[in-house]
Amino acid sequence: MKNIIVLVSGGGTNLQALIDAQKSGIIKNGRITCVISSKPDAYALTRAEQNGIKTRVMPRKEYGDSKSYSLAILDALNEEKADLVVLAGFMTILDEAVTKAYPYKIMNVHPALIPSFCGEGFYGLKVHEAALNYGVKVSGATVHFVNEKADAGAIIMQKSVEVKNGDTPEMLQKRIMEQAEWKILPEAVSLFCDDRIKIVNEKAEVI
Ligand code: GAR
Image 1: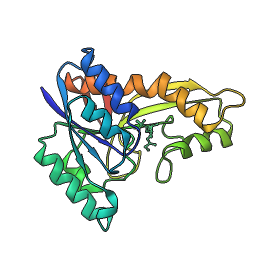
Image 2: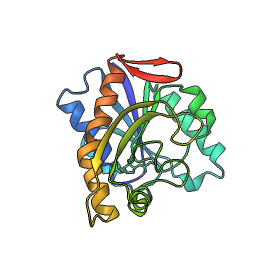
Image 3: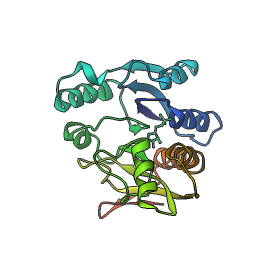
């Protein structure tokens, strides 16, 4: 059984999708053993507590630079004996102290089809604003491994979602969450826990 540590900063609907997938048996070979939040008031913490999952609050503000925050997160992941780390709406970029210690063991869900609308500065509603400003007709979500570059690690799964006339960023965000993120994130976690993701030439293949 793999120890899954979920890192959050906000509402935690993706965390909820993982909890539900664990309960319904979609995730069989892993257990969410700890949720770490970068924000003390994140609703994701309540979701974890309601489901009897250990929580740790590590406010980004209490650490000076990104390096010292990353080292503190690394210590926490080691203490929690993480087999898989899931960034589920985690709004802080972790530096290579963490990514090098957990190669192909950290996954992130991004609310667009990478390589579109991704990288530093593209998070949350900003991603959907950028997609609508560009005028794309299809967007979606991507689950990928995390490496030292923002949103640039090997892609594990993607799912497209239609953009509709008159969409606001909030409407598009909701549709992408419901139709893509909450489906492909639990699926990717389940595949990882079943040892069904293989790395070939730095690309992820599902076997
Ligand atoms: C989700 O849409 C997630 O894809 C996005 O933030 C939202 C968090 O929602 N993540 C990023 O933009 C990371 N670059 P949640 O807290 O309800 O899961």
